[in-house]
Length: 109
Image (cartoon, rainbow, N blue to C red; front, side, top):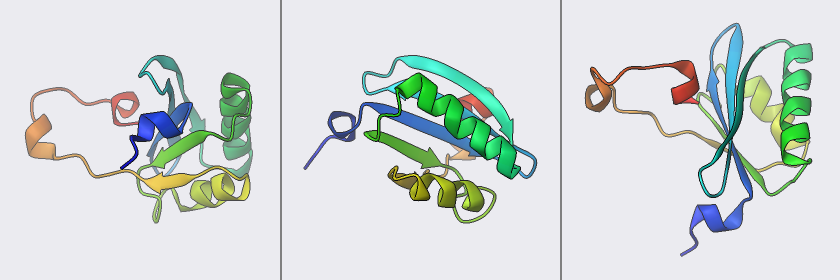
């Protein structure tokens, strides 16, 4: 069994919404590289992917983890896969377990 952190150099977490997506880049060691929000338009997705590429040096050993890959994140997921990156659906967070802990889109991503 492989440990995911040993397989990829970077991880891109995406918290998806109807009008914008929040992107967070971390390294395989868990270090936060950057986080930002981009619109869900074609131009916004292109800008987001360029932003990620600049911060990861275009490393294809980058795993994208998208919340709502079959709904709000469907268009983004198609662009990610077309660019040659591996992409997976993010597991749903347990709202009860996080009650009172605080919530942010950046934390979700």
